[in-house]
Image (tube, chains in turn purple, yellow):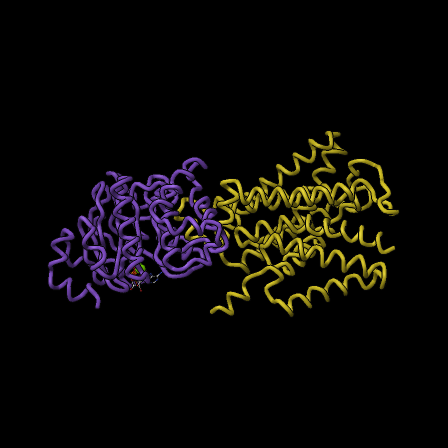
Length: 248
Length: 290
Ligand SMILES: Nc1ncnc2c1ncn2[C@@H]1O[C@H](COP(=O)(O)OP(=O)(O)OP(=O)(O)O)[C@@H](O)[C@H]1O
Ligand SMILES: [Mg+2]
């Protein structure tokens, strides 16, 4: 479904991604494991197309040069140069890191803003589904999103991405800063949405322990380069992974 | 006298809100301070005047045409001028002010100044309200302001584009992840702001006459109201219009009209000293959080 081939991204002269190649097949959950500044967000931005918008903004203000080489194919078509809003229309939806939500709007209004490309009826249906995935959101639906806890905002952010009805859902560090219990709730929801709605998932994470048990395959990225890849089970038993990415 | 002054203060409030609402809409959504705002206001007034006197078109048709032209003009200014300098506030101000200057000074150069350049009132009638004479035009302004503000509230809370406006105003990059195109929204926000300026002109100009100077005046008033209210906040526009609207009329009546300007400016200074980001602005709170 998604094939990233030899992707290189430079911020000015600094290399953020160095010849990265990976593949996500339809129906899979694929993980990208990497520590701070490994290049996870850069990868997500490249696949979602946000990096194209960032590049244009930098050019406009005469800021740093962002260069992108290599290519990204989605459903067999090269999308490397396609703007983000068209990728969203084609089903690639990113939930950015640190659960950004619209803080001044209520939870329900956040869903309705996220449903820009969808009809009211479609939004209502997905919102009901999101409430079944994340029951704690139900009693918060009138609350301003800015007043939710980090974990609640994360649920909301994933729910907002679902409202767009993604075919390929990109989740950038969905477990960041969550308690173990909340992490489990989010991981369970990711598995459920993959199984029940057939949404393909590419997710990034710093720590391998919570995600390796549920991913079909995972890639380990260091300094923008691929160092290891394999099935979730293989990587679970890999001693290098255990020492570097299992945390304390 | 108190009741009369209060009624006229309310009317003044409605006029100020009507003048400021378009400027505020554009700024609130896309962060663009459109300094050509006063010029497009005057442009619409001259446009309607021309269609009425030179082409003898019916009033509603002339108004629709002027609103349409302003919609287009706002969009064109964004696409051909602002797009390339987007995000650099000072360049945006200089570019839009330059465009405004060119439009207004062109009218001055063409000699379109004088009392014959005015728009007719909608209905030549007046009423007595609580012992005070109020003409139909002023009542129309109050009603239209209220309807417009309610309409805008409905638009931004219950339509896809309005909700996209709210999203992009809060977090542009996150809005982008939902397929909300920021250039499209900014184009629309400039177009709608300019169209609202045209509507404001059609309602307000019949109370006086059309002149390039009026364009600068409208820009300054819109700026003052938006700054006091906290740029980009509709609630702020309403509150600030009340403050300035009442301050002006009460000074007029009880102190003397040569003090009006000073009292309004003092009101601005007081508000900004107490709350530097305006009544409903949130920049200050953000600063404090950091
Ligand atoms: N906008 C930017 N400008 C300059 N350098 C950047 C920018 N974004 C990322 N980088 C650099 O690219 C490299 C990869 O960053 P990236 O944000 O992709 O890492 P990450 O894996 O998401 O890290 P984290 O776990 O901290 O989120 C880093 O060295 C970072 O400094
Ligand atoms: Mg990151």
